Amino acid sequence: MSHEKGMQADVVIIGGGASGLCAALTLAYGGASVLVFEQEAEPGGMTNFAEGMFAVGSRLQKKHKVGLTVEEAFNVHMEETHWLANPRLVRAFMDKTAETVDWLEAQGAEFAGLFNISPFTPRVWHQMVGFGKEGLIKPLFKKAEKQDNIEIHFETEVKRLLLEDGRVVGAVAEGKDGTVITAAARAVIIASGGYQDNQEWVDKYCKSGFTRPVVPARQVGSGARMAWEVGAEPYDMGVMQTIVLVPEEDLQSQLLTAGFQPRLWVNTLGERFTNEAICWKFPMAGNALARQPGAMAWCIFDDDSRVVMKEKGVNYVLGEFYDILKNLPDVDAELERGIAAGKVFKGETLGALAAKIGVPAATLRETVDEYNAAYDGQKDWIFDKDRMYLDPVRKAPFYAVKLGLAAFMTNGGIRINHKTEVLKEDRAVIPGLYAAGCSAGGILGDTYEVSTTGGSLSFAVNTGRMAGESALEYLGK
Image (cartoon, rainbow, N blue to C red; front, side, top):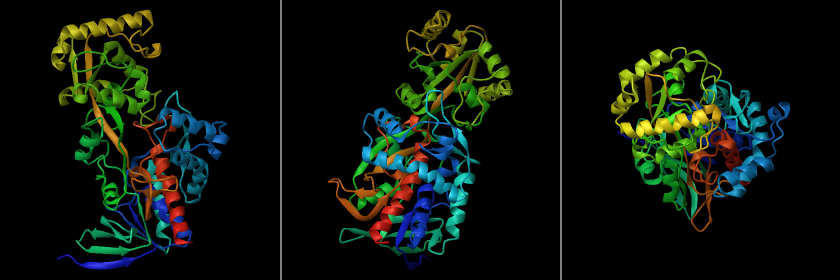
């Protein structure tokens, strides 16, 4: 039997991840009372799996003599998002990032160092000790627990917002035991994440179509839905952080590392379709794969390449999940495991390999001949791939590792301004309603931007703080 009860606070926050906790602490330090409702049994959400966050002008960057300025980072971001991003929001976010790193360290967050995700991107990635769960969420949650004016309820799902005379004045939530909670508040901050676990929305909005979440997290877009119900403009739907992966493989798997290399990629027609070194800009590799039949492909390599990976190392790694200077000592066993699982196929001839993976043998042979000619001439005249990533496919046996699409998260859903206030379609503010992190749109164009490495987590943290500050102003505190 369900029960009903009432609660009251200055602000209700939907979500206990990076955005929600940063907003809660900002509000608490400003003298506001806060109720945080988190649907899961622990805090963190997708932040628990994040490696690091973007910042520009931080003390860590200054220590390492990184001279990138906010102006430079802003211009790169806006150019690479084709000015589809909201420039006022982007600038407000970037202006805050350096100071936020200091603020997070004051809360107990630990940063392991400064990195760049690729040879072509700036050193803006502030990685955390033990990833997001240990380095960021645990210290933030510990701080929040100590605040008398923050109350956090786990396994409690917000169902709808309360609207009165055009203002948001609270929310209705349901606890694990079925208790219906009516929480009165003067403001609400939506910090509930994206919708990558909502396959209906992914199919409807995202160009990638079907993908599997890298980490299932019950992120189904409930925050966006509730905002739309009270008049918010649906905005920036369809931005998904896609990544090419070997299906159902852990991010630290040697099989995944062996398969997701910038070697020869062919689609189900046996045709090469991209500059494979685009894997350094992983969402763009996802875009390229999403346009192929069935959104799948094969990474083709020969026995010489297998030996190189086993004895010397690889040409590419995903983030910091594997050391690029480290070899793959278990690659033989991993390939055999992949063969048993139907993710890897092996052939003594290219014709035999083509038959196993179901592509036309003549087309595959033509593709490999063209690729080998590019290696011999040290010039990829088709897609202009860097010579260092050209490896011939000549020595039997030949391997094909299956590549498919996955998604880290989605970005967007609710239109906000540079103060994180939620807007209607006519750009009027909905009083008392704010959105932060992946629930909010405006930070990207149509694809995740890797020059702003760690941008999603950084946007979550910074807009969480910004939403808290805006709500304090709204409250008159």
